Amino acid sequence: MPKAHLYLGRAGEEVAISLLKKNDYKILAKNYKTKLGEIDIIAKDKDTFCFIEVKTRNSDRFGLPAEAISDSKQRHIARAALIFLKENNLLDKKARFDVVSVIYSEKYRPRLDLIKNAFELDARYAT
Image 1 (cartoon, rainbow, N blue to C red):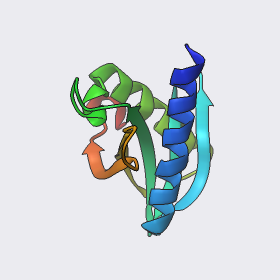
Image 2: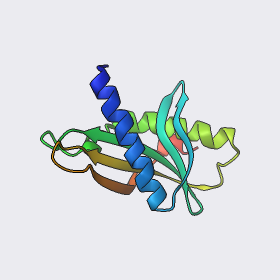
Image 3: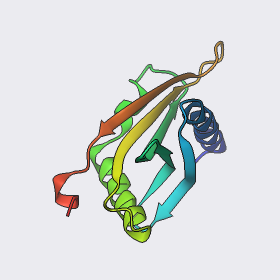
Image 4: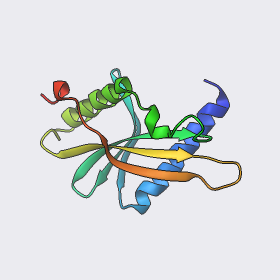
């Protein structure tokens, strides 16, 4: 992956964390990795564990960043979330999947959008 792309992704995650903190999320983990998938940010919003995907783009010319989260990517995030919940004995707690969409422009500050409950856990993985 080109360095510029990695830098853009990291910058997006940093501004996403700032946005989440401003919205009273408590950050629990960043870049949580398992062999089944990765979660950009794990946080707590009141009594709910949030598994957050950050999508960053230079523009919305090819669609909004959040639209780039495929069904396959959602499954990987969901599987990693289940591992986190199982490892921490949290399967009985509330959980959801959020997305932070970040669009950078040369002229303006980043445009951020926090999408709560952006997608749901596929019923096949709920048991």
